[in-house]
Amino acid sequence: MLNIDDKMRAEIRQAVEDLEKNTSGELVCVVAPSSARYILFPLLWAALGALLLPVLNPILELMKVQDFAVTFTVQSIFFLGLAALFLFTPLKWRIIPSTVLVGNCHRAACEQFFMQKLHETKKRAGVLLFVSVGERYVELLADKGINELVDPGEWGGIIDIFAGDIREGKVHDGFLKAINACKDILAKRLPEVRNDINELSDSLVELPEAEFIS
Image 1 (tube, helix red, strand yellow):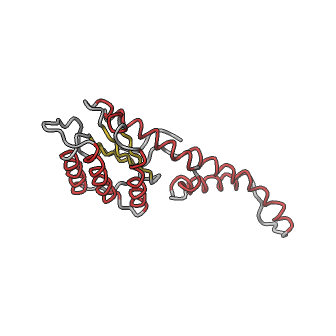
Image 2 (tube, rainbow, N blue to C red):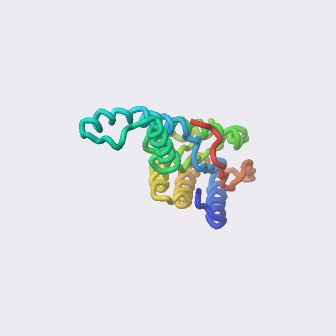
Image 3 (cartoon, rainbow, N blue to C red):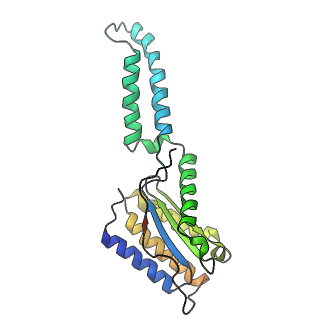
């Protein structure tokens, strides 16, 4: 659950509108519950745990435990229990390699950059602020017209602060702070042009649960 209500959506939209009053850049905010359905690694770890369980049998024999032994039925139950634990609890995020998490989020961010048509703005001045809550991931992608004027390193501080806000469950606050920080950068590098047309939606784009399986 993203826990974003209508009041929060209105505040984020207003912040984007305020940003675009001070710059000819176009900002689109996208938030996703997660960037993939993480199934493979939880099942892999659950399977490994179940396969290793029979090593307990020699130990049980040494301890002269006669009322219990690891059988296929026990392994199956253990697998199902571990799978449920890894699939449906926050422990899931600890067993998936960070490279997999980052790779899925970056893929999703790139997809949204094109799906939201940020590459089609007249001045090539689109900026995507992409957030994937489950992975606590934030990415800023800018089109050619922005990258020629803004060093990518300037976005780093915005990303780090926002990621910290996500860890504290403050997605809404993180968006507002990030949008205002982007406004300061874009207003300096790409100031407002009179009669500039708003080409993209200012509303927060909320994605459904991911369909991509990882």
